[in-house]
Image (cartoon, rainbow, N blue to C red):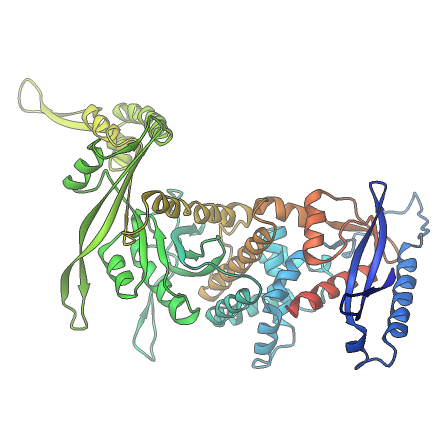
Length: 583
């Protein structure tokens, strides 16, 4: 490395530390550190040039030490020590650590630690659970067993970890408010559109949670784990989770609700929290048809928000069905057609006196037909009909599924026998129902308050919902949020809080890399940057890809060496924390 003295047109001299190297047969120069103008540096150093020459010399000496070869000797007869818990050391998690400290989560827990009497560091527990949720999702016991793989100090017991979960739960809303404020410090956030959806997570238990009476207030608290409409069609008790995300797919907040809560009742509490605590301004709320209710539309209007909701065509009123199926007004060709109309929707606004007032609000309806969607619907129905055919001959299976799924295409008719004394039930495929459903193949309808927006822009806004659907897949598959292994309410809340922060870290890393990699690919890359203890303080690494190089550049660290000393690993982590916690 060299001290570069650059003469500027103004006559002033600018200092920087540079490194020369060869690449592709050509010599290149990389700026390691920009120092400033000599005349300004003289305020801090009597002789800036002499001072920074000394700095460069020390840097070069340190670099020589790092580049010096290490000689190790091994005995071929030596066996692995089963008690050696430090045989592996993680380095890839430095990327997670970088964003963890960018969000200031370490400071958040350190500030609140002073209010509690702990013999251990709750921040160490929280980050271990979050990191493990990304790298090796599993139970809290599995996370604890891996704590020695990390370079951070983790002096706590498994009992400490489990007891600390209720502490995390008590600060859930404060933490989400904190991380949202910190996100705004290092990235421009687009909340003009807010995407919302609901999913649920199952628990492998036999009975639901009982409701609890608060003896001091007299209020009844409903248990979380209740049987409801499961996305996986399971009979286990579930929890409902609503997730709100910005236009780029970065989570804003979430809410947990008892498993028997209707999806449409979860939107308003989330939006209220986002507006009051996180400073969410006017947003176009985008959601699926399950959230398209009079109350939700009315609340958005009163809060001066917009909305883009899908509208079920099959379950719509006669006027909507006729308008959608009427081919007049459609623009497009054989692959895709679209049309719109200005309309009025009646909603009911409940006043402070509890009375509902009927209000007609202007809306825009956008209908479109897609050949791909039509073929997909036809293919899916054909698969259902195969099951329907089996239900015709199986009484028990029909009784179980007659109101949903394959059962909806089976028609049961009761007839009298020839004597007129005995009745018989005849089941057959309902061809009329099939024909009716086929009419709507490929058709979609969207209803929106944004009557001024072009049709194509409204559809593009609605299509952004794929991000939240993909996010739920990440939480359930990559982060393995389900099934949940904890049982108390506080522990369940803490479990979802750590899963949410793990998801947020992953999404921020994806955003920093331009969303060119899936969450699974990034997690795999970080997990694979792991060293094996050779001897003394040396660790051998053997994984490198273009993605790992990019992640290293992202956090300003070299993650591509074969051999690291324990000291150099700790220095990388310390530098990353220090560098990014200031920003």
